[in-house]
Image (cartoon, rainbow, N blue to C red):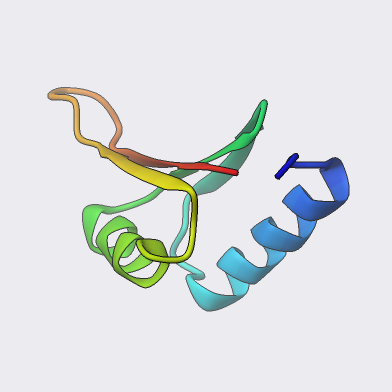
Length: 71
């Protein structure tokens, strides 16, 4: 699936509605990068885990934690 601008806007809007605590949502090629507190990121991960091509939780030490969702 190609992540078009329109699809990204729809995904962003839905995520912000369902998880208002999200700090930011960015688009990078065919991926969506979501930042927020760990509790919110874990909730998103658990909800989307089986419904997307790939989802990765990045928890690098001394960096902001984030999710990458590939489409």
